[in-house]
Image (cartoon, rainbow over all chains, first blue to last red; front, top):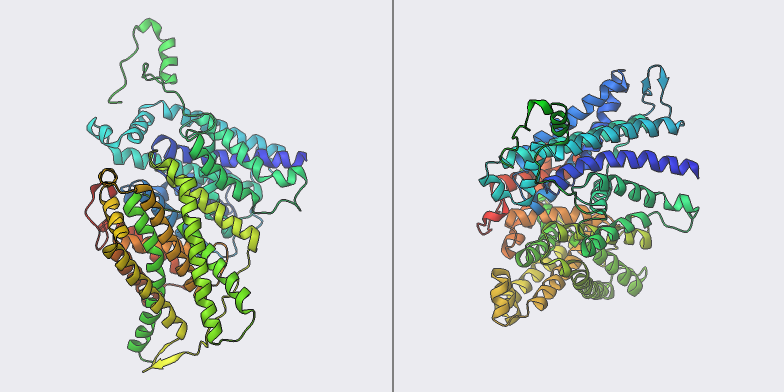
Amino acid sequence: MLNFFQLILIYAGIYALMAIGQNCITGYTGMLSLCHAGFFCIGSYATAIICKTFGLSFWLSLPVAAVATGLVGLIIGIPTLRLKGDYLCIATLGLGEIIRNVATNFNPVGYNSIPRASLFGYQFASRNKLAFIFLIWAFVLIFYILFQQLAHSRLGRAMIAVREDEVAAQSNGINVTKYKISSFVLGAAMGGIAGCLQTAYTLTVQPGSFTFMVSVMVLCTVVLGGMGNGKAVILGAFIIQFISYLPQLTGLTNVIPAQAKQIIYGLLLVVMMLWRPQGILGRDKYRYGDPRTRMEKLSDFFRRDKKGSRAKGGAV
Amino acid sequence: MSTLTLYMQYIVNGLTLGAIYSLIALGYTMVYGILKFINFAHGDILMVGAFIGLLVYTALTGDASPSAWTLTAFFISMLVSMVACAILGMLIERVAYKPLRNANRLAPLLSAIGVSFILSNGAAWIFGTQSRRFPYPFENEPMHIGSISITPHQIVVIAVSVIMMVLLTFFVNKTRMGKAMRATSLDQPTSQLMGINVNRVISLTFAIGSALAAVGGILAAFDFRVYPSMGTMTGLKAFVAAVIGGIGNIQGAMIGGVLLGILEAVGAPLLHIPNGMKDTVAFAVLIIVLLVKPDGILGKNEREKI
């Protein structure tokens, strides 16, 4: 039982990381992308190749995975992000499938026994779940704070403006394409980081595991919690993982069919759209009155004698 | 076999595949024409159609060897499956899409993804995940025209698709309800003011689209076998076909489907693409079409699309 709770914590963390990325794309900028499984796949493969084939450290593979995934996001983002709504959704879905196809053809059997990650001589072994919980949630915390800052920064406000009304945003001098691509690349990089951490935990990579199902789970996480709300996304990740491990937790693995969780995810999407499209926690409230970010407020607080907060806000 | 006949053979195979894509693409395009939304669950309706067809067919014939009766039973099961899928399509529209008609554009799309997930996993739960073969209701001995071989099942696929498309074209262009449909797709509020029952038209659109998907599913079952996730890839490719032809345009979907089928059958061997990467061709085509000519071959020029 405790075992399953620990597993839920680990996977909730991994999915929370992915969902933070998806939230940046779908929640902030309002683009429905369905290829997080592909980004996850690239991150996992990058880590596996660096740790196993080149025998380098896990800590090196983390930025490489993020950058590689971000680059792929950039390359596929530049042509596809000109598309809107439904078209973008299908194009990204197709791209996710292409990434999986290419990965499967590149290495059909995947990678096994990837070297463990270590920190100051301590080795992260898969059976020591507690260490992984700390490791993964440390990353979740870091990226939660970073993306929360992002949402309240100039970049984040521009993304939200694009989501709310593209034409209005454009006429206010916001370079829509630029912000769409930035958002997509950041979101993609988060998928890569999640893939990297998952590989560090399972120490295996199988191309068959990066199906469309993963993308839908990530999307479901964001929709369930509340699009554009950082805390809600993490709550969503917990709920999704809890549903996923429900048969094991209740000890009813024989009674509940394997498809039950997928059916529940589908139902969740429909039900949420019908009755609570803003998600459980709803949208984050933005302090439109005060355009300063928290960091700016903090620095202003310490430099009070210099008199006056810098008027920074720009177009948004 | 010379290269020319080899490619002729690929074209024949592509034509069969394309006929199936066209049938399914019609459902996407009709719904898009009226509601401006992509019915993500369409591919899974196809799968349900194939399963119902298979179940009815086996219930009627058992393990009987091909005869006149099996062929009749095949068409009966196709009819049953069409009716069942039409009802399913209307039901899905009523429950999952209708309340969201005035919502934000993302909402019905997400809801459709949910429905698609429920259908495919529900089928996996009920029928199991292993794939089943759809038995041929006739002797499937290939015939030879010159050095090109064509199987009776390919002829059936093409014949049934052509009949369905002719019927649909007749319905849309010549009947009162078809006229109402065209009017609704042109301008929904105005047609409502003219006394057209828009809700009924939308229901009917879903019913027709789903019935065509059921036919497509059964015909696809000969080539692809029947399994719960068969609809995902086939449905996506049919969507690609609809986009190639110009989404929202009925003739476009037919042309796009045939074109995609031939492109896939000819393109893969021509460019030496390994079999595992065949699906990539369709998506590469999709992305190129969306970027170069998002209105497709016959589409109307609408700015909103890009």
